Each structure stands twice: as C-alpha cells, then as structure tokens.
Length: 277
Image (cartoon, rainbow, N blue to C red; front, side, top):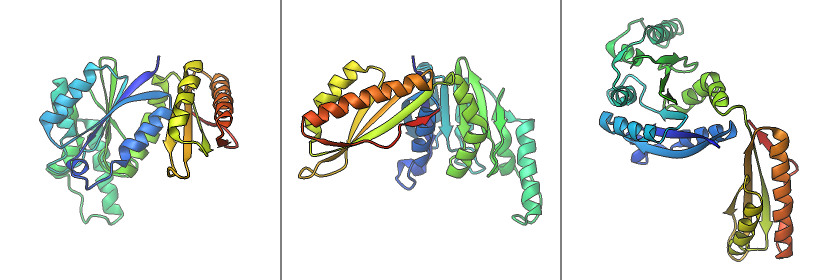
C-alpha cells in the first residue's frame, strides 16, 4: 500500500494570484520521487481558524506526512504555527532550541553588516515560538526555523514559504525522514512521445495496458494541435527495489508502444528509464 502525504499551503498571496505556488509543485515532485503518494494539496489564507480547521480535517485522513508551507515569519500575518497549535490543542511557547537558532542568525547578520545592531525584538522572538513538543529544523538560508512535530501516526512538518528556504530545509532535514517513512522504496518514471494519433485513440490503449500492468500509472499529456497531434505518455511506478520497478516500466513501455504502432502512430522512446528514490 502507498504511504500517503498531504500538503497545506498557507498564504493570502497564493489565493489572490500574486504568487505562483511553485512550492506545491516542487514538494509534490520530491515526495513522489521519494516513494510517497501525495493525496491532496490544499491552499488557504493566513487565518488561524482556517488553518486549524483545515489541519484537523487533513489529520482525519491519517496521512503519514503532512507538510505546511508559509506563515513562519515575523510579520502579523504569519499565523501557521498558531493554527497548528490550536488544531492540536497545544500551547504556543518559546522553544529554547529555536530561540538559539534565531539568536545566532541575528548575531551573524550583524557581523555580515546586514543589520546595524543585535536585538531580539518581539517580532524576531515570534519565530522561536513553537507548539509544545515541537522540534525546530535549521534554516540554512533564512531566519525562521522549520518545525517538526508528531500527532499520533502523522508527522507534521512546517516549512517557510520562501522557496529557497523551503527547499534547503527539506533537503537538509526532511528528505531522510520522508525516505524512512516510505520504507526506502524506489520510484521510476519515463515518457514516450507519440505523433500521428489523437488522444481519443490512445485512451483505450492506455486502459488496456493499465489493466495488464496494475502497478504502473499511465497518463497522456497532449502537446500539439488537432491537425498535428503530439502526445507525451508518462509512465511511473513505485516498487520495493529498482529491479522490480525497471521490469514493470520496461514491460509496459513495450506493450503500449506496440499497440500505438499498430494504430499507425509513431513513438519516440527516451534513451534511458529515469530512476528516483
């Protein structure tokens, strides 16, 4: 059975269209390649009640991993941790480890000339206030630490909304946890490109091949126009070992390629099967 994950993206800027939610795309890709199945991505505004209610709803689905992005900074609208604390009925308190992380960052900023003097203002201390029984995750690029906590069987991970900070914390502190949750499975994906046949003619072929290969997911992506159809067919699978994954993809590739050629389509297969995980 696949290990499920969910993403909760927080930020008014996402809802009004000011900011493109690249964090969701990047995290979904990374979680998938690490062997998890992302079941849901939710975007909400900077509202404590809404964050709390959405989090509680997600926890009812019992994902193994639940990642939030955004809302960890020093400003008035950074409310994600307050929402998490409310959802879990935990107090929000200064975490000494997080406090030291924030303190060290601002001392470094003074040495580097980014700020004139060292001062831990209330807005800066705010970034060290975490839900009780949380673990701060070092932020190699920015100031606000990420946050890790557990609720029953779910790991909740709060990451900053700034993409570079989110990615850095994920790669340094989260990826290994995700890989462990996924039990070190292997993810394989590849694509073939088809010309000369429209998607509606490919659809029944995909149905047939997926029935014969239930562990391989196949999705068509039209890239051309009706007068000159050009379609990408993406294949992916998750398995306990790379040998099994590669055999599944190879067998499926051969079958669907043969069926497409019988229909008069032309296929182009990449030089190698891509492995992740």
